Length: 202
Image 1 (cartoon, rainbow, N blue to C red):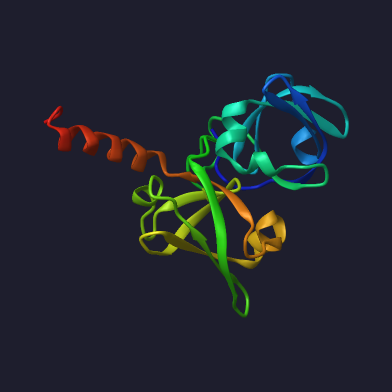
Image 2 (image 1 turned 90 degrees about the horizontal axis):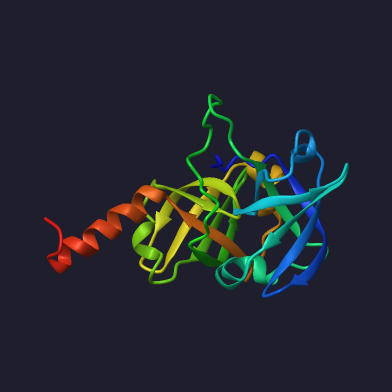
């Protein structure tokens, strides 16, 4: 589990095919301070398991399922990624509960800069749209955010200066792709509703 509070921005230094998936190597500092083999690290919202590490990098395997359903398909050497270590039991939950299980890819539709913040509008696919609510929580590229506006096929978030400075979201452009994870409570509510509508639950 993660909280969606990014600890640092890392850089992909190697990306090699591995079976039907890939092995990614990422340059980092903060998340390597206490890293161990098998640890989970959120990489722009994707939960990956550390396979190897050094003083300056860690490597993880990215399976085909992740590549097919996230922006990991567009990763390349030099790509900047948001990094967060798994939450520790007993620590403060500053964002919201994030699993690192991406629901889909959103596309940046518009960026409206304000005096001290930016409003990002992004697309919602039909399967994800019912899971996104006004003032609800979601995760974009591993960053815990609150929905500030929503439509049938789009949503918006307002980014404060700290988010713009400390994450890759401060460097977005129209057309960029974002890993999107919805609130897990919304997933369960939608699933329960499917059974209720079909008459298989009461």
